[in-house]
Image (cartoon, rainbow, N blue to C red; front, side, top):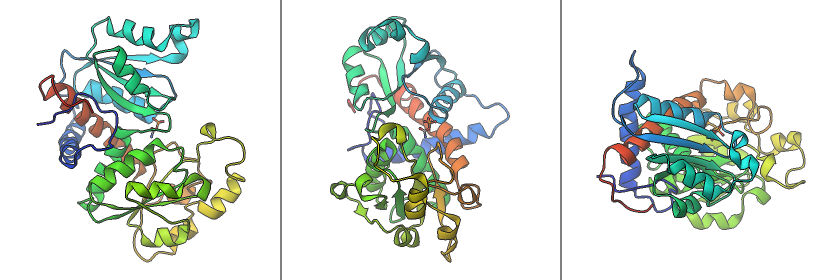
Length: 312
Ligand code: CP
């Protein structure tokens, strides 16, 4: 039983349901290994990918997931739409829904935009990243990748390093990993890792060398210059020196450190190329797991349940 109509946030999302998404994603990953990578699970469903912000991984993996599940899929891009002629968000959403769609996958630069969308349309909504708020499907694929690597999530030491303050990936990972019983430590410049965030059940440690020594896996976040004012970090070179996951830092450990990054990467800033391309990096496996995770989420929301569920 998967009793959700939407996937907008992982805050208060039940542990058993996160585990069900991950378990189902492993089943779909097997489909992706077959010569014919397609199942009929969402035949007859129509899904619109409503992207108001740039994306490579999330957008393509959602589209692939929809095609692998035999759904009909339509891509909307804000930059080539009638938004450019002054049409509102509400009118855009309601006109698209008038064409008889079942679900919307939306990325938007404003935190909370999916909750706004929910007021305007009846279709099911999946949050593909809303500003600095949440990116729940990224956290699911990250947790799937951790479980695949270690066989479990509970009791692992997971560090999230970088610009936590502006990161929707960090917020969704924190909710998900804490729910699943991992030990989570956040690390980054003090102005980008507010101490109050420890109220979410995580530790904060500003010493990256201690954090790398402690962790089983590190999820390294991009410096989000597009969401920052001037001066939040002194320079890329200074950032790398103080908080970059460098080859030198990684090599000091005597046991393997699993390297994760949601992408896009700033090589030579938060992560060195030698680290990103090392045997210890599972970054491209995360990308593949993104397709399987999104197949699982779409299937559980649209294909495997009654229409009435929780308004998550
Ligand atoms: N990880 C992630 O959200 O990447 P994109 O912005 O390319 O979708």
